[in-house]
Length: 410
Ligand SMILES: NC(=[NH2+])NCCC[C@H](N)C(=O)O
Image (cartoon, rainbow, N blue to C red; front, side):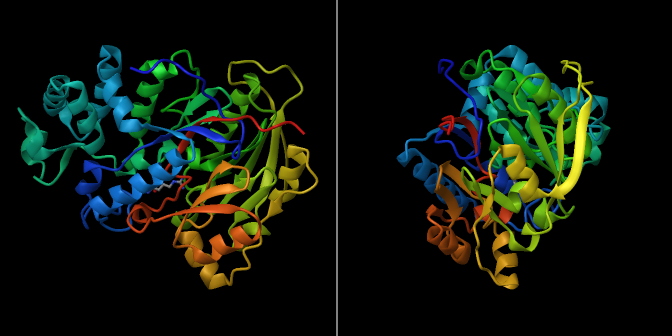
């Protein structure tokens, strides 16, 4: 096992040192035209090609000196810890579809698995006919193609199931039923893996909905939180109280985004590519608003009751620059016509992963956005994503930064 090392992230663009990825595997083979909508995929990906694309993504990071941690491997290691096993198994069978008999049989099945196999079963799920010793009324009546434990094909979007703020990690509370069990896995990982020994958890799985794709660390001490299809205002509020009480941030900008699939997270419409620059979907650039939330007058406490001061709304770019203490937050002008802009936004053109200021990973297919980034002085590391993209997530969605260098102070 690995020994504990430094973790922590205070910006979107500080040099990336360590990142958590998940190579898609057997869980993608569970997708069919009947279940793909419910499982939040737009189609049925070619799994081997998706894996090749993901391997190339990981290699692009490693080649640039980034340490890549693999969620499935860490999970397999942590499944040797009895307390971690008990927690994730309890979550996996906490499903009202099962009934007591099947719940018991499923628990017994999972408890009997070796650490590697348990990790694999938790990720790929357990199909009806894979359950050794399956029994009970719910089991008899379940269709053969159904899952006793549903698969987690969206686990590859590691951005959403946990997010680091400073030296603490927020295990998130995912909004869609197809994803809510993911945070049981990240919670177990951070609580029990020696790599993360002593790391404090900032949020938790069963709280108000909050997903990492909605959280942007605009600058040290300044967060933007998108509120829309996934993250609720209540989630933003609780996160704000906690980051203030723990001294991790002084301002949270709460940014309403359209409640629809194309804009499911704030990072689908904008991501940072430099200390003071964003790439943003042009259709929203002028309309995006923000509420500026800061700690209220009295001293913050740790009990989630800190009074908050809420101001706004104001245009997002103005509120963000003010909170960041800069004159202007630049938006890279992609110069896109509305149709190309809409197509490239849908294909995660704005969902870039910064490896350092002015160096970002992007999907190669978004040629017009990428050319505009290059023209603006941003070096683009282009990766293929024809199959990965069918889950509607780009390089930022597929990565959870664990360690970034702090930005040099001006
Ligand atoms: N941070 C992101 N934009 N993540 C994209 C997640 C995509 C995933 N299929 C979902 O619907 O949840």
